Image (cartoon, rainbow, N blue to C red):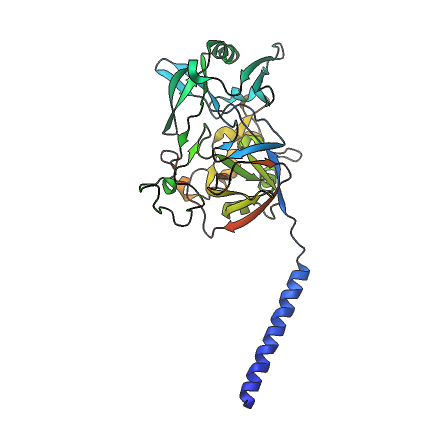
Amino acid sequence: MSTSQNQLYLTGAGVAVLLLYYLYNSVQASPKRKPMKISEIYIYPIKSLRATQPTSALATKHGFKHDRTFMLLQVTPEGHKNMAVSRYPEMTRFFPSIDLDAGTITITYKPTDPAKEPRSLKVPLQPDTEKLEPLNIDMHTSPTTGFKMQEKYNKWFSECFGYDVIFVYLGENKRDVLFKDMVSSSPIGSSWIPSLRPSVPAAQAITFADCAPYLVVSKTSLADVSSRLPAGEDMDVTKFRPNIVVEGAGEAWEEDYWRRVRIGHGGAEIVMLHNCVRCASVNIDYETGKPGTGESGKVLKKLQKDRRVDVGAKWSPVFGRYSFWTAKTPPQELRVGDEVRVVEVQKERSVFSWPGLS
């Protein structure tokens, strides 16, 4: 071997040793990051009413079981109008609780007027639709058929709201997901989104949830929102209507780039495909059932300063990720405390593309 070759090998060996030394010291200097976990699970059996907060829930491709399977409609001269908390803030004064053993939901209405007593109603979790009147419902241009509940339920809600209301059950029906990058124009068996198939099935179907079966948010980002409010005032995470709250993210807003996460020991995976863009519902005062006042009534404006990060909805701030159950993941129980691992990130931001909402 020539002298020049010996020098080359020695130089290469020296570089390798220095690189290993650098990597070793970098690892030693960086403490191991604690794993993230589910800190809260929320289910909203009746769309736009208060959440229930179980310690575990059965997760399926359509969302958590019993999530948003009922909704309310205001009766109008033309027919009916979908009710959502952004336009009907008084919906925040209804508190549901689920009894799985009894198969019921108990809804407690708590008036803001102290002179009025709270009142409760018990509803079957899964009503028999055979004797119920079908009703066409169009939500965000994704129509479905619901079932009008018996008059005693409609009357109870109407008395609480002070105007005529229809209480509707979804049954086994679903709505189509209309994000442009998730709508297949080709036969189901063909490859329409190579980067997603076979992880996400072509035909996604949801309940009365707005756009996706799951909404995942980060507690670290929630702390960032709270930091924008007066000292001692924390943002109520339920105003963002999440299903899963993840604790332990290293930085606020890093979830903007999460693509796929794995949860627990059962191999559950969800794909995070779109941002959740926000509206005035985050300004509602849940205690009064009215639009918020003071700084907590300006949360949307505060987020608009630096969280308008989705070019598909450039006027709306982003908080949270719309997420979908992967095709290979069977239904399974998710629990508070389950470890959450990010197994895939994306280089670029998602682009919101639901027709009419963009």
